[in-house]
Length: 435
Ligand code: UD1
Ligand code: MN
Image 1 (cartoon, protein in one colour):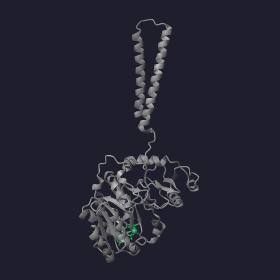
Image 2 (image 1 turned 180 degrees about the horizontal axis):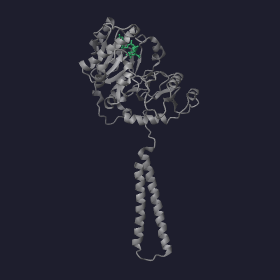
Image 3 (image 1 turned 45 degrees about the horizontal axis):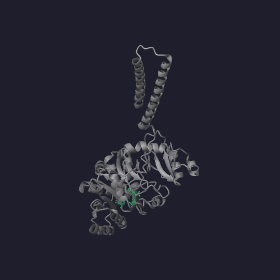
Image 4 (image 1 turned 180 degrees about the vertical axis):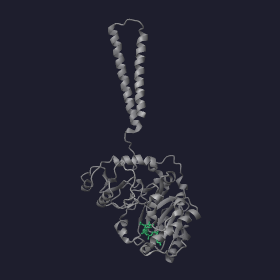
């Protein structure tokens, strides 16, 4: 539309110019007989002038076209401008931490880190919610109540659920869901906080854990498509992430494991909270409603909970290989507005689909090592799973969404090279049948 306007303007200017030249010639020499040599001179100057003007117009047109966006923009999430004119005074935002505990006396390991790394107890008050009525664990927590203003609350309902035979083995997941419901009601309905950071009693945290959540708070509260900020990257194993500690993403997959949510979200999902498998329930489209979480390239939590409700196999295979970030990124000094949907989507699409497409064999052989990043395409569920296995990334889906995916794209590092494992560029939506 804009281009057509410019073209019409050029044509109009060209016509006007001809009319003006004609009039000037006629007025200068009205009725005079001009010798043919002079006539030729006048004509020559006219042509020369016209040529100059056309060239000037042409270059103006070209610069206009570049401005209107046909040239690729060089956005990068890695080189971020410093935060300027920030509207949020982030040091005033109160972000309570809810620590979910049960019967592990090692809860002190998590508590020590939270207390050592928080800036102030006013900005990051800690509430430990304890299930299981385990006395030795309660005693450990109690010590922090006196010395560090930690609030210790106990989930009162310790009855055993009535479960049929095949669900009995999932009793732990039922109890966890019940505990979460009660604890989050306490945070939002009793203590009246407006946001919460939820952690579990087997999580280590990175030095910039609090900095990360503070800085992403304005994104959480101002972008309606963001419903959570998570410290977790499901493909965040050693060797599968880059060194870009400040790199963040949008993710359609709810990662949990150290995450922040707003009160308004709890008021929406709390009343229909499930009786079990709360995290998979949140991943369902009925709850998620196309909303996303912010997640980091390098995890800001890792788990030391080898013995837990889910058995140790998952821990041995995946969780123990997660790389915990060890640098402090001054996120609150950075401009994170690139994570807002309207900025992120066009940029991310270009980033992924401008990347050269290769086969998985080419990735594995290292024959494209000279390229900075590579894109591998998948079109079917089977192809996704087989390729994911080869490349060593998580191969499962929840509600049709692959772990860490944004718009179907899974970003990770393979032998030092950035890989975008992506659907075709015309991707529209997830297929819930992919399980
Ligand atoms: C896994 C998830 C966890 C999620 C849970 C429920 C990982 C690494 N962990 O738990 O984030 O919340 O599934 O889907 O993927 N707990 C209680 N009451 C109980 C038992 C446990 O409140 O009766 C608490 C624990 O203190 C802990 C949390 O629930 O904070 C998770 O328990 P854990 O034993 O660590 O189970 P995971 O298998 O890690
Ligand atoms: Mn655990």
